[in-house]
Length: 352
Ligand code: NCD
Ligand code: ZN
Image 1 (cartoon, rainbow, N blue to C red):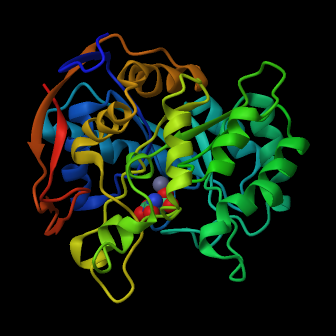
Image 2 (cartoon, helix red, strand yellow):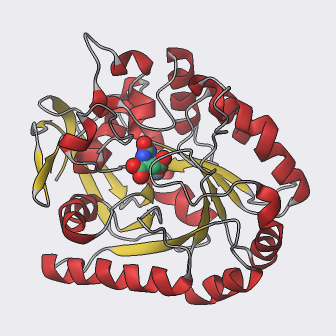
Image 3 (cartoon, protein in one colour):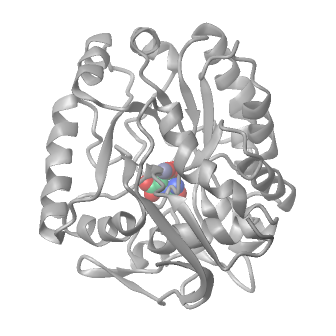
């Protein structure tokens, strides 16, 4: 590949961390994702959360109904369950049999719709034991939630306080450290000793590759750049970009695209979440190109995710061209609108 290509062809990517919500708004966000990705891991933080196989099946049917309405036949949702203090080992085995791809750990109170999350991982030992036994991945929102820990330190503290003890207790459990935001997390995942087993990986969002925390305060408060875990200092962005573009198969694509209506973001207490689904691949291409590593995009976007989840790689290809795309100021979201990441600006790469 030349140093500055104007076109790149990739095996079609998947999104290994996505929020599509429910009801009226789902259709609008699904269409954006399905334009680019063949599959996506669907986060279970609905209200109420998707805690059982039966609830996940019902959610999957609602997703399928929307795909049918949209005439989309090329997209597969991968379903997850929301881990709670009460998740049983039986539910884990039932989930495995039903094709659920992971359980999501939200520490209680960590982020949007996490009130039903885990209060203490000790309550989950039976479920975690079963997950380890059947090869069910644990998807982790890696932040401690104590009010006395500075919000910018919550992920780094989580590594020592929760993740490392968890990996010691369940050494064969497959863990995805989701949407990592710090140098500490990138290095922890890179350096983790797994005895050659595929037991740890991390997803990285486009916003954490492209922006640092200044973007939340550029000339005034910028609610659309606020997500959780929150953007960090530049040194962390640089470490994440290095990890993503390193060719290390422990790091792969997960947008964490998390739609909230404009009014819920531009509010006295605005919701956390960036909507990147509109042209997520263009954003990733821009990030990889910034360090002249476009040749590493395909592994990150299309190979390492399915390999970790023991799913087949996609076979179709897509093409990205270096052709500026204007990102609209707003997009429809049910009865409301949503402000996408980089609204009103241009992104250098577009999907053909
Ligand atoms: C997500 C959401 O809105 O559901 N928000 C976010 O800022 N990322 C939840 C999450 O993944 O933390
Ligand atoms: Zn998320």
